[in-house]
Image (tube, rainbow, N blue to C red; front, side, top):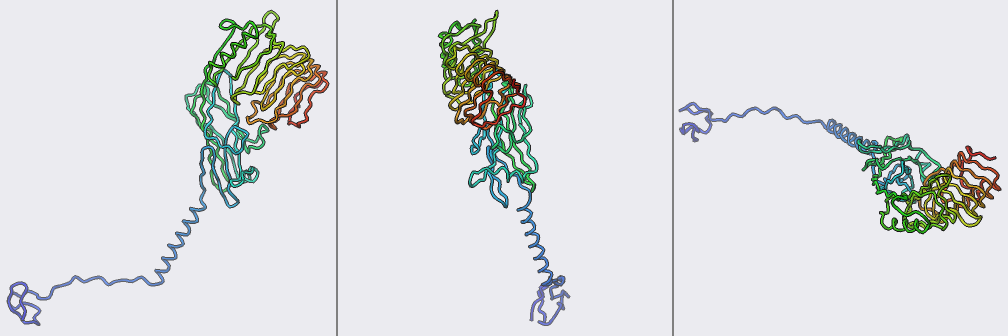
Amino acid sequence: MKKCPDCGASIPEEASFCPVCASSINQRREPEPPRRYLSRKTVWMAAILLLAALIGAGIYAFNRPKVYEGAGEVFYSDSEGSYQLLTNYTLDRHEPMELLDTAAGAEERYRFPSYLYINYADSGIDATDIFMEKVSSADFEILQPEDSKTPIKWSDPEPMDINQEAALISLVDFTRESKTPAQLVWTLHMDNGDTVKLSMDLAITPTTIYDYNSENADLSDTAALQALMERAAEEAGERDTINIYLPPVTYTEQLVVPDHAFNLIGSEEDGKRTTFTEGIRMGVPGKGYWISYFTGIDFRGDGNGIGLSTAGRAWAKECRFYNWKTAVLGYGSVWTNVTDCVFEDNGIGFHFNARDSAYVASDTHFTGNEFTGNDTAVFLEAVPTDVKMDFGQCVFTDNGADIDNPDQQPIDITQAIFQ
């Protein structure tokens, strides 16, 4: 006997309901839907499709266009090799530069080149030719503050003679009014869709400008001028600009330029010009980027000595050199420019004899000069870079030799006049 779960009455074991309360003894179950099983073929098809999708995603991820970015340098690899791309403004193709911190003084305009070098990553050997075949286009731009009074300008990137080792070059122009920080950005678009971005930061610091003239300094003779320059070199910061406006007097002793960059500006009054009869000498500078400018000055010799000798960067503009053994000599490790000058009755007019230089050429122009009656007008014994020197608008008259070029320096004389 068993008991009814509802009323507790005793009922037979085989009863399906209680004879007392008529309750059902059997508990009902909700019917379950029949189970369905995937066929073996369907499972295999699903697995194959999943595997194909994973392989396709992997292939796409591996082959999709990539973006390579770096500051100063970036490394790029493809099936043919690995390459180092770097940017700077020097002649060292292995020196990446993340920041150019430069100064701006009183010059109306400043310029420097932005170089793009390409090397094999493992050997450092020039890889320009093979890599540039993979490049569909190259861009250069400068990201800079929008409120700059004189925005920084740049040229389209291209190969240039000023540095034939660089794959591409852009010339960057700025003034002391150009606002920074700014960023120089090279962008290379590769044939396979990849993009390479290479950047260098630029900071321009306006320097203090010191102006000296006869009203605030003693410029009466060489000794006074020498003393002023030595004092100014000690007091000024290394990037400060020192301008000395010289009166139309004759300085009869050699002037030695102290270890700083100076701008000496001559003058003319009643037919008299600022004149040096024993020349000016510059030694090796403490800072390789210093450039001293000499403008509107006469150098009159006695057939001996050197009018302007320099082992530092120098630029003579609108000067006149008469009767020197050598009128202008650039030697050591230096870059020297002469433009719009007169060279007359000298043994050698302009003598370039600089064997090595760690610094880039200041400028390619040697234009507008007049060479008359010199034994040798231009003697290019040794030039530290293979930049093409432009002698456009130069006039060569009655010289023993117009241009002596044993160093086989590239020169442009297409616009020069020989008579």
